[in-house]
Image 1 (cartoon, one colour):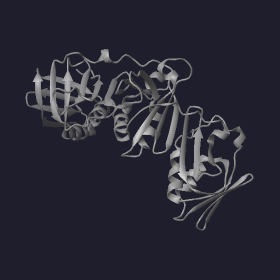
Image 2 (cartoon, rainbow, N blue to C red):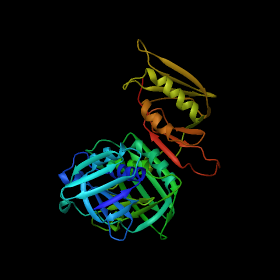
Image 3 (cartoon, helix red, strand yellow):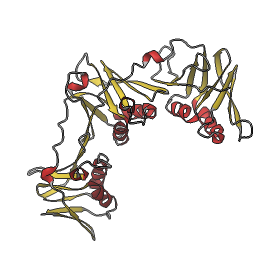
Length: 379
């Protein structure tokens, strides 16, 4: 096997493929990255797989001798990132691979490619949407997913497909984030859902090319037809597949209050900055207190002999004055996910769920993003 490639394109493809490499591989060969070229083709295919997530990228190269080789993915990634500004030549000869770039030369040992598992086939494409919109939606709901692996169901982001509507939702029991957006299904009448590991979805969203589209491909089992559920994502010539979490997502809609006793409207950016300032004196066990009254909100943290902070902001309040308290990080995660200039905060009672949402340009439209968070009990 021998090929010649542009350094930047090669390094970018290697770095992207390396993201799917397992941190602690269950088998030595799973730490490898497969590089393959075919006769009559100018494409180099790079792939990684850990039986849960697979990644495959293609890059244009000049092929001299076709073939396939398996090398340490992490090591190749480090080498590719630090190569000088010159074309890259890779030559596989027996148990060794020689990487040459300018005056730099690296020799890598190969892994037994015959022991490497075959990548799963990409399911049939179910539909597509803007890569930018999808990445933004993942960033909005992702922080609400749990990091406690003892409850796998809560470590995922639920993708619910209903016609041309796609809803992303995540929860860790203390908060729920929901984002609704439009997509283009391949066929009418699609009604299904897929519970995708949040960590994997975050990596996929982070690597999407802006200004492009992303194809979503669901296996039949993802819709409850039995078998192993899987979802695939394809963007800019790069494919990722991942196994789904085998569990039903929580029925979260009933958790959102049907009516609110009070609603506050504030400018989003100034509120975020004020929360960050006041929270400087709040440690992990110190709540952020917000007191809403007509025309203003007062933010406070700290008390007694502790460090203290307070700040006042203008606010529109509909309903009775109310005082609530939150874990600062949880409150900031919700605020930071609101993309509109203003944010609505809906209350029922001081100890009942509070809902943050964006403010649509058209009052008749429902919000695209909702974030339910449980307030803290304070004396």
